[in-house]
Length: 411
Image 1 (cartoon, helix red, strand yellow):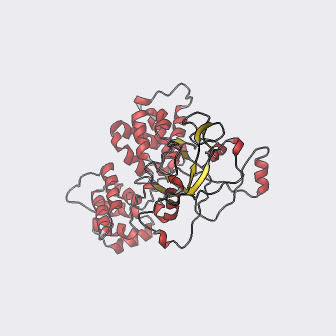
Image 2 (image 1 turned 180 degrees about the vertical axis):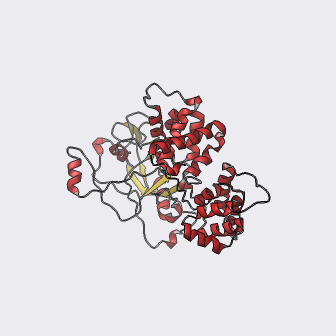
Image 3 (image 1 turned 60 degrees about the vertical axis):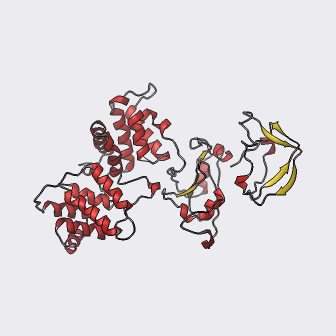
C-alpha cells in the first residue's frame, strides 16, 4: 500500500498507475478520483465543506454496525484512528444480504449531498448519508470513508505528488502520448506543467476536462488564470536581518514595503460587475468586507455584514496586479505588473497619485490624438492616446462614482 512506501518516486508511480487505469477504463471517474485522492470534494474557493464533526460520524458508525456510541468511543480512544475502528466494526458484523457495491461516483456524490444539507435536521440527514455509505462498505472501504469524512486520509503523500502523477498519467494516454519536439523529458515536464497550471487555476474539474480533451501539452493554453478563481499565493521566505537581503540582492534593483497588520487577500472584479474577495487560503470572504466591495464596485453587498454595522474601517493597500482586461500578468515582471492601476506617458509621470473620489465635468474645444496622454491608448492608435484641447472645469458630478466616469471606449 502507498502509505507503507517512503520514496516519493515510488509513491508517484503508484498514484500514476491508479490514474492511468481510471483514464483507460472509466475516464468519467477521473474527477472524483482526483478530488478524493486530494482529500477534497470541491475547489477551495467554492467553500463546499462537509460540515460534520466526530459526534455525527460516531453516531452513524454505531447505527451502521449495531454498536453503541460508547463502544465506538472506547475503541477510538484505544486505536486513535476512527477509520480503523470502522474497519474492525464492519468486518466483524455478519450481513444477511450483500449490499450493492460502492462506486467512486456514489461516494463522491454522497459527500456532496452531505455538504449541501442545511437547515433544520441537517445533522441528522448528514448522519443518515454517512450511515448509508458505511452499511454498503466492505473490506477496507469503511477505513477510508471515515478518514475522508474526517479529512485525515493518512496515505502518506502530498498534493504535489498527486499533481505530478496526473501529468505523468496524461503522457501515457495514447491519444496524447507524443510530446512536441522541444520536450526533452516528457514525464518530468508534464508533471511541472500540471503543478504550474494548478497554482494559477486550482480547479480539478477544469484541469481534468482539459487533460482528457486536449492532453497535457495544451494544458497551459486551456487552463490559465480565471477571474473568480483565486490563485495560490507565493510563499515567503523568512530572513534573519537586513544584511542578508542586501547580500543576496547585490547590484540588483529590489523593492521594500511596509508589512501591514491585516489580512492578505485577492480582490477579483468580474466581467458582470460583481466583486469577490478571497483569503490567502482561497476562502471566499466577500460577505466579510462589504465596504471593500462598495469601494471597488460602487455597489452595496447583498448579504452577511451590513455596511451600517461596520465598527472598524478597512483600508485596501493594493500591492500587485494579477490580471487586467482579459490578460493574465502572472508571468510578467513586478515592474510591469505595477505599471498596469495606472497608465501615463513618461513625460507626465506624476510625483503623487491621489485616490479617485470625485467625477468632474470638463468642457473642451476638441478631442485630439496625443503621443503624451494615455486615454484610449491602443484603441485609436497603438502608441497614442486621446487628449482634450483647451479643457475647462465645469462642475463636480456628485451623482456619479469614479468608476462611472466616461470610459476610454466612449471617448
